[in-house]
Image (cartoon, rainbow, N blue to C red):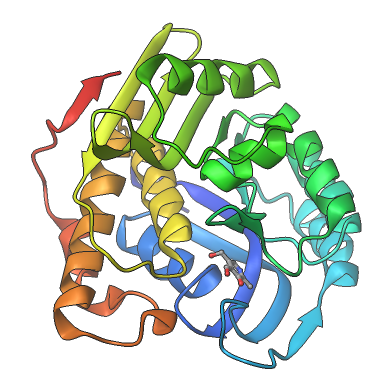
Length: 290
Ligand code: PXL
């Protein structure tokens, strides 16, 4: 039996498992484990690769796996410190995620509303899923959309122009009004010519930004890695701005390492070369008030 001081935090991660291309559970498992948090994968689907340009993907939907799995965990009287949802392969999976959230009311509810990127919805995310994702956002404690997902959730046009600080703050506040007390928007181009991850803590009334270095390549899975580091940080004692800072610095390291090797961007970031950074006691002072 573990004593409370040696007990690890435990996360149920409801995401797909893509075999090749370094996204979703393939990156979530190593990242969160390396941060000293137990992560229990609850796969929503198994795919041969991610859906970002690698040809005819083999996809096996696991919608009918989710509810019996929750029942099994209930029968074992397992508890989770965090339920973290992401890519869903059917609309009904929204209901199953809601059941998970209801089953563990004391858990930190993290929703990464995976729906699209670069102004376009992913081809597996149809109109009904795009509409219903807001039901998960409503019950979440924290959400981590990119700007494409922000525009879908708020029913507005994708912002092609850089955001002023006041527009960015109003987006964060509007998302929080949907439910979550903490909101993180990833990859926002700001009008002062910077790229930043943005945060909002409603209770504290504070807006945050962590600037990132621009690299002219986009890799799949970086949103999943970012959210995983954020979850790992928050569960091991980080404040929101420190967790955002940690996640931003780690993504920057993984992207810059990968970019230097000139690999095919569709293959994702070379996570294996960067993971060990997460075990270090890093100094994190890069966050700023927005
Ligand atoms: O990283 C988001 C993501 C998750 N899962 C699958 C994807 C993508 C993005 O392309 O295709 C299957």
